[in-house]
Amino acid sequence: MTTPITTEALAKKVVNQEKIRILDVRNTDEFDDWKIEGENVEIINEPYFNLLDGIEPVTGKLTKDQEVIVVCAKGGSSQMVAELLEEEGGFSKVLNLEGGMKAWSEHLEPVKIADLKQGGSLYQFVRLGKGCLSYMVESDGEAAIIDISRMIEKYEAFAKDKGVQIKHLIDTHLHADHISGGRALAEKTGGTYHLPPKDATEVTYDYTALEEGNDITVGNTKVKVQPIYSPGHTIGSTSLIIDDHYLLTGDILFVKSIGRPDLAGKAEDWVGDLRHSLYKRYKELSEDLIVLPAHYSFAEELSEGGSVSARLGDLYQRNEGLQVDSEEVFKKMVTENLPPQPNAYQEIRETNMGKITPEDEKQREMETGPNRCAVHG
Amino acid sequence: MSMKVNEVLDAKGLACPMPIVKTKKAITNLEAGQVIEVQATDKGSTADIKAWAESTGNHYLGTKEEGEVLKHYLRKASEEETKGETQHEEVLDLEELRNKVEGKEAISILDVREPAEYAFGHIPGAVNIPLGELEDRFKELNMEQGINVICRTGNRSDLAAQKLVQKGFKNVKNVVPGMSSWEGPTEEN
Image (cartoon, rainbow over all chains, first blue to last red; front, side, top):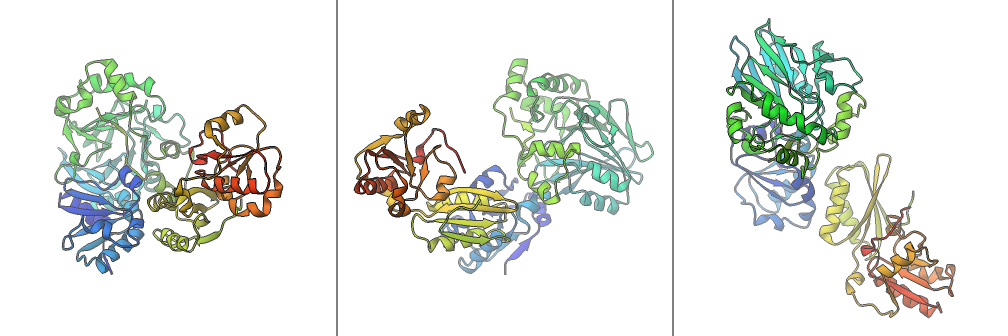
């Protein structure tokens, strides 16, 4: 019997930057599209169906006495391969990732970003399998969650553990890469769901407008959440400044890249907005703000400990998306040769608008694959 | 839609890797050129069957979705198709055929691939009689008007063309190489 490893245990290894060897036995197209990444992750791909007649295709690439984690889509094929490695290959430390990439895609790793000035703290939830980042601000028994993912139970459990009540669910924009849990958790907890009105023109539900000038407070006015209108990824995209120090940029600005303007089919229309937000609006803010984006694309963006962040002033020095002087060149960069769009992004948008309500299993499937919300310069 | 196949494998309700494990087993019992229908409910099976077929040299024909059930069609690799030498001398290349088809010329096309192959894409108006049934069914065809025979790569159609000539058909042409390289119009059924 092979030893299982949970996504939680694997996530700890990834954020602690431990050396990990992975044999991914999904088919090569899926592997090329999306895989487990990390600073010290060594990963090889050999589809399980090439190993049915024997494990020779991988024996030369793996060492028998080193730990190897076998991964597939849902955990079934990797179990079979793990057993083959043990029984036929004499491998001694084979682990099977329980639930496979499907479970990996849903894992959230909470990382504390900071203690806030007047009490309370800010957490980042890193969705390692998809590169999505969401946030929880808690202070004085209250919490706000920003850009929450579909797996609302995990935030609920976390809030319960901290003894805080979830009061606000905020989406910086209408997401196209993942299904928001904001509305669902607001209904469940009696909290308020905030969404930028310009992204909400087609939504089928009630929401509270997330607009510049309407600050949100968490925990008896102690923590200020200040919306800054910053269109470009979507027309409504709104950034948040928390505690006057943390800039949640949504999908406008990432650590190594910038947001793409095309996921609502309006790249040409929104290029100017994107440029204005990045090169004017953000420029007027303090350079000492700490940027906390809604995504990351590369494992190297994860710091030791697993968080993703950067000082705004530093990004103006080294983020390639912020170094383009010519508007024409910028326009070309963000509208031409874009990476493929996220899996099922149209359906995801419609789900987030409330127009369709796919079953849980279907929602999981729609979200598989990387977030692909960025343009890399 | 039910399609004529040599074997039906029920892998419904089975999770990965079982659909492929069972398909692999079932296909070893088939003769080269025969077609298997694999019924599965595992959504991941489509991409895996396709990739598996490519890596083993079997021919993935396509997948039909019927409610929750995915029906995958595979044709076992056959040596005859790698032979590459054909006997029947009268040939027509794809470009000429395409000109005739697109020029709405009245021509008759006989597609001698298996029904499942035909179903996933054939030239509009082509008649399907698989090579193995030609002996029994050649009377369905007009012997006098001339006939263009096509398959996937030109080998089965070569054998079919020779057979038709023996039966006394006039003006029989083997279309080379075949549907694997056809870029003209197709239809499915």
